Length: 231
Image 1 (cartoon, rainbow, N blue to C red):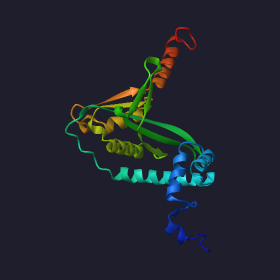
Image 2: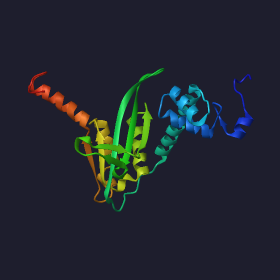
Image 3: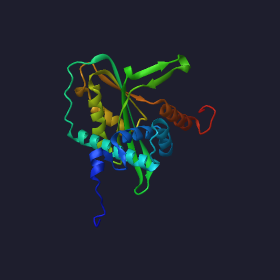
């Protein structure tokens, strides 16, 4: 056609999405794509369902689903009102939040930062082993992410995450980060004392990796680079 587009009425009636997949197949394709690279995901999907889908089609489905989720979260974050201050807290509840940013080299726009935040509760943790052999697995967690959008849009998304989790009623809110100032300020505003239930409080924790890194730099600055006392 002169417009460069085509229409497939039968596909629309049958629920066939762009990429020639039904909604149910696209859902399965996106699920396996979260667990493996697209080529491996295509092989896993074929083995589990006998449905053959090309890696390119799985990539397209995953990109469409991801774009829709990001846009949905952005719209909801923009329209979310201020959470009402809870009248009481659950003293036995503990919520955890982590946030960080990483630079990605895009094909068209060079280096851009992707920001990610995760939230979960103490009750979502599964512990096994003891002492040095203890292992902790997070059984359920929620995420929000923003790509190249700056701190302000990400702040709104993290606040949306906290509202979804009903974290403002937790007795303790533990924020774990690398110590970046923008992360500290963001969570300090989201979980300001006047927004929390009476008796609830936020605690900011520097993660172990960055604690050791900062101590290493400090020791070498005080005692000399590579010195025995520093090490």
